[in-house]
View (cartoon, rainbow, N blue to C red):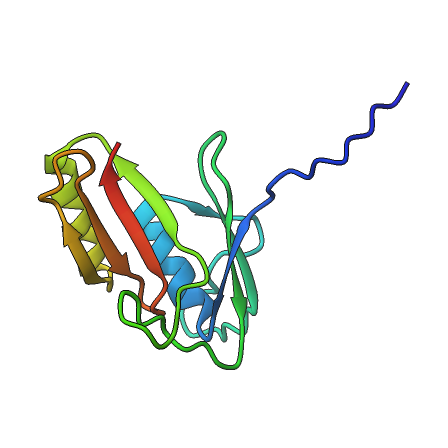
Length: 140
């Protein structure tokens, strides 16, 4: 007997961007992910016309995909104007790792949106990736 379920499984999170490779490279470096076979960057000097890229992580990780769009206004969160449609949450083990994660993210091109490291229950940073998508790093 074949069991059919009506509950879908989450396959991946897709981020719209005008520059799929640039954003994929940011998250590949930030989270230590790998390209899906065939999505790797072309050789130096070769054109890169990718309009859809997928990054995969370790066991149980949800892949991140990057879809080219003609226009993608950066979120202005926490200010009104252009709301965030979603954000990614990531965790680190302790406050020292939180500081290292922020520094690494900024070196890769992120910018700080909110510093909530003074929260004793859930210290965190909210940063924006190079395309303006907010993401959180917190102690979990």
